[in-house]
Image (cartoon, rainbow, N blue to C red; front, side):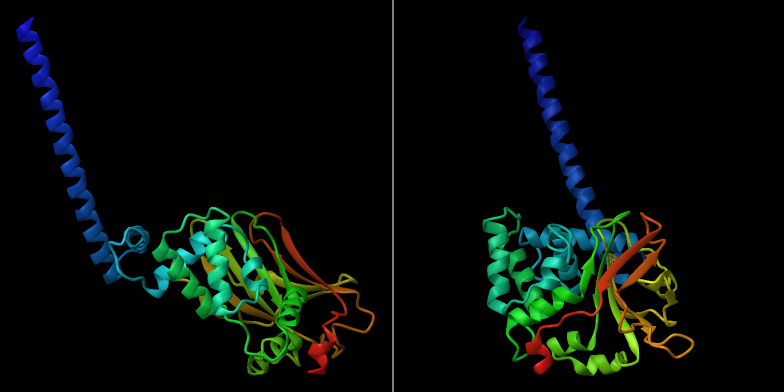
Amino acid sequence: MIMDSVVQRMQKSLRALLNFKLLLVSIFLFLALAGFVIVQGIRGESLFLNDLRLWGRLFLFRYSMVNGLTAEETSALFNSTCNRGCHSMEVIYGAVHTPLGWAQVVERMGNDNGVKLHSKEREVIIRYLQENYPAPNTKLPLAIVKAVKKLVWRNDMGYADIYVDIFYATKEYFMAIESLSEAGKYLVDRNLVFIVDLTVHTGKLPTFPLDEKTFLRDDRGNEYTALPGWNMRMESREAHHREGVVRFSRFDKQGNPIIKGDTQYIEVVIKDLGGPKERAYRWDMPIQFPPDLLQG
């Protein structure tokens, strides 16, 4: 009986020792893999390894094992927690906040809405929003700027994990954000301009010629092709987020304006983007912009 008890204790001790060794081996393998991923990611030899390195860095940053984040890592943190992590881009694009206002929004999301962010992550996201979505440098009341954005912005809630946000970038829109130079860049007096933002939760956005998939349709059923060229404004390195411009001539082949005095609405139609055969985004005509904007 005593011998059996000794044997059982020895077996337990051996199992504990074995488990400890397995733990040490697991830790060693994890550190070795992490080191390999970081080195290979820096060399740019594998997109898969780059992704592992990216999310590994974010994990280490959360627990203060990494001091700072690169621009790519900051964008990934923002997209995984705010953009689509909680809602669509509506809240971000439609909001107009001062730098202090963005800090209050992020703090409220954590304190009141239960978004799990460590203090270092909150600081990075607040700074990202302040730098990338600042209050427009305009003398117009913020309520007017926000109203203009709401008038020109359309979106969907995603099909096949591809989400779309579109701004009908009219001259009035560029006036509201005081960026008439950009309006000139896209020739808004001659073209109908749409800023298209694509986002995925998982995986990567497929590569496709969006100008060939996008059409303009009026209330009479007339359909117009986009001008050649998908003007890229931004694409994240991990290919989760892409933004660019699609343009249409304001005039048909006969030289007549596409949007006439009696046009009731126009639609931007994106075909074969995942989910339904077509995705349509409509603006009723004419758009009634705030009088204070037009007077200014």
